[in-house]
Amino acid sequence: MITLTEENYIKAIYHLGNNGANTVNTNAIAEAMETKASSVTDMIKKLSDKNYADYKKYQGVTLTEEGKFVAINIIRKHRLWEVFLVEKLNFSWDEVHEVAEHLEHIKSEKLINQLDAFLEFPKHDPHGDPIPDKEGNFQYIDKIILAKSELGAVYKCVGVDDSSSSFLKYLDSNKIALGSVITIKHKEPYDNSIKIELEDREIVVSQNVAKNLYVKKV
Amino acid sequence: MITLTEENYIKAIYHLGNNGANTVNTNAIAEAMETKASSVTDMIKKLSDKNYADYKKYQGVTLTEEGKFVAINIIRKHRLWEVFLVEKLNFSWDEVHEVAEHLEHIKSEKLINQLDAFLEFPKHDPHGDPIPDKEGNFQYIDKIILAKSELGAVYKCVGVDDSSSSFLKYLDSNKIALGSVITIKHKEPYDNSIKIELEDREIVVSQNVAKNLYVKKV
DNA sequence: AAATATTTTTAGACAAATCTAAATTTTATT
DNA sequence: AATAAAATTTAGATTTGTCTAAAAATATTT
Ligand SMILES: [Mn+2]
Ligand SMILES: [Mn+2]
Ligand SMILES: [Mn+2]
Ligand SMILES: [Mn+2]
Image: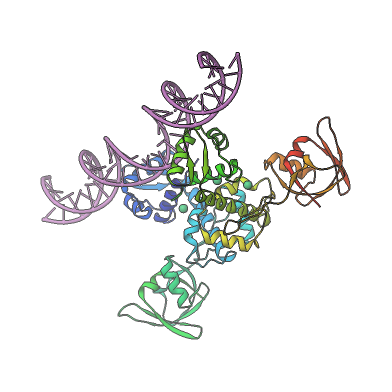
């Protein structure tokens, strides 16, 4: 039996360690989970005992294959629920994360696989992140951050790195959505802001925005 | 803040006390929750401290108005999720209860109200039980158990008292569903079994079945 | 009404997840 | 290489929900 808390730690370790690739520090986990380092140490030991993580004192932690599988499954559930909330229940993309944070812990294979089918097997969540399939497979999109775009080139918006409500609301108010096609009109060296063309209008976005919006060449 | 465990106790007290009307005993709660009487006493004290229940030592417990409101809200969520699972995710009516037991604790007003709208404001769950609206209002159907039916009269099946998987599967295998119309052909005094006519066929159901199936005169 | 049985509560302990404060190890700086 | 700083772990408490065993209150029999 795996507890809700254990699941949240495993997911945090997975994300912090670049999809389970790198070792993760105690303090990084503590910050992500909004808890204290001592609590993290205790939990890491437990995850290690239960074979979800490899851990050597003072050396950080990595997920085992079993741990990665758990993480991917929670992420699958999280993202499918987000799609459901947006597509079927009229949530906006800045409202879904918090609710999905709870729904992701509901344990029923049938529930999640039927939900997947009901949503017609979506490949991406409302923020552009890939949704793993039943077996845990998923592909990354070949995307870059807007900050690294080339002058004059044409891109499509495909994801966000920052899923905070304030950033998503900023995009909404500027009518930038996933799928929007943009042209790079000017890259300002002084403050790294970027002027982009969007359908009928041109807007200037800050470096901050440019670093958190993923685009793909079209 | 109300915990998941507190919610489950409140719901149990509500159901055991006939929708919050009667006093409920410690042992009855212990049996329903599959826990020990001593644990129940502790929890009752807490619910009383938090003003969800009225409690006098050795005298049993009743829900306060606040407690009843909490109970009705959990029941609303439970039953809406059951409808969702059957209508949208192709669950059968004997599979939904267990999953709904978990989904009922997800805390989001918007989620449940949008789900209600998405399902087009259903009035009954898959077992024929009424679904409270946003304000907590709901009506009972004017129903009786099949055991109390009159010879020769025509009834419609409108609900079940026993939602156990085995009973529901029994009904499925005998093609008895909510909405089925039946005629009472014979009431056997010896073992209280009842012969009923259903569309094209006649079957005999035991007293056990007759006591757990709700019907309404048509 | 006294004795017995049943129900309920209390006392004390335990596991899970957290915290603070102190101790230890590792890393960075002089 | 020694010292200072930062990160991590340990020790000991706390809260929530549970348990067993014993005590107390209530209900049932005789
Ligand atoms: Mn999310
Ligand atoms: Mn979560
Ligand atoms: Mn149910
Ligand atoms: Mn429940």
